Amino acid sequence: MTNFTRCVSALALSLSFSPIACSSAVRATPDASQTTSASELAAVDAQVAWYQGHGINVLLDLHQFKWSPYFRQPGAEGIPGWFYSVTRAGAYTPDSAGLQKAMADWWTDAAGRADYIAFVRMMEARYSAYPNVVGYELFNEPMVGSMGENHAAAQAVIGWEAPVAEAMRAADPSRAIFFMLRGGGDNGLLNADLSAFGGLGNMVLDLHDYYNGLYGSGFTPDDENWAPNWDSTHNQNFLNYHGTEYAQEQNLQVAINRTRALGIPLFIGEWGVQTADSGAAAFQSQMLDLFSRYGLSWARWDIGRNDPFTLLHTDYSLNPLGASLQSALATPAPTSGVAPAADIAPAVSGFAQVTQTLSVAQGLWSGVPAPAVSYQWLRCSAAGASCAPIPGATETAYTLTQADLGGTLRVAVTGANTAGSSSATTAQSGVVAPFSLTLAGVTAAASPVSPAITMTWSQKQAANIRIEIRNSSGTVVKHLLYQAPYAAGTWVKKWGRLSDKGVTVPPGTYTVVITASTDSDSTSASVQVSF
Image (cartoon, rainbow, N blue to C red):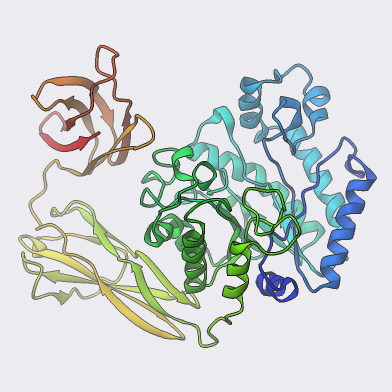
């Protein structure tokens, strides 16, 4: 992985203004030993050789954009048209519906994967002699179409990628293998099972970051979907960036913590903002600060002279964003590392009742090298004072006992690396009570750009759930759920602002009432939302 970690610094040194995306997009063809045209491979040869001569490392990104030209999307490239017109002739209509089905089917299509592996082997045979080729991307921004944005879809992508990674590793074991999950944001990473890959020793998680920093993490609690949606959360759709650096940290939290736990690098393989965006300088400054404090490698998108995200004028000179990036890169990274800090505070969650288990989330710790994190549970008074360590309670979970009844708990979390150490103590838990049916974490949030109201709640045991939406007069305008069975866990439900009569309700303040019931118990919780 040594060459990979030099990619960004080498680019900055040689081009004197910015890391660029170390990638080249090449389309596959029917005959895996050739390309669509010899001139395309020759162009890639010339690029890789030029980069080698200038000390620049290269990631060969086997790229798709809008999936395939077969489906008549403007500018589409990736899966070659012949695959759908010949190999899968008649299986897909060349329209949006056919595209959605094709994307879903791809991840279980054995013939498609075999053709893809043959293409990968051809590329590796051609470029393994270049010492500046640090690795290969499995598949750019995997799309799952009609399969839906969910955990099963993420596992289908992983199931397809694993044999491709195995073939890559067999043909060229010294290079890094860059992988993504669903889309550019690696949706589903939080709960993804990566065991199909086997060892992860030479693998790198690639993440593309165009988040607009307006919606907390920008993800649903299970990390499976953008919240409120992709269109509302990405710089591609706006020209007035006014997000916060804290929200950008929240957006990266799962990827940073998961890759640290796995012991693999995180590479921000694309990030950017439109050049015409009034807040572009603020976005770029926030991201550079984060990358420095977390020790992340990255590639800024892009240096296409006519691209909306470009760092160049049409005469190849640096535009203001490019010049700002050049200036930032002139400052060397601290040689002593970066001391740990809990940029996102650790927090205790769970039901504070005897026999129930509380968990602590470590938050997000900046620091270079990545800090090692340790835990100590503390038993406190009902007011959260007079805390004392609980012997042996040093894991991320703790089961409440009778000794905790009437008190609260906190966790002291410590981050340590070669540059120093620091500790952060969580807020106190709720006062520990006897066991009973409980709802927690009940929220409701309106989106400023879509009609969706997003509701979340947690329940500690299986129960039937009823959700009612009431107007300011207390009248029920929508029965969203009625005695629907839900298992223990955290749940998300959306309301499109339609009443039971199917008409859009007027703006105002509404109360969301969630009721959980079992054969022997019942409880309700409510929260207000305005739009």
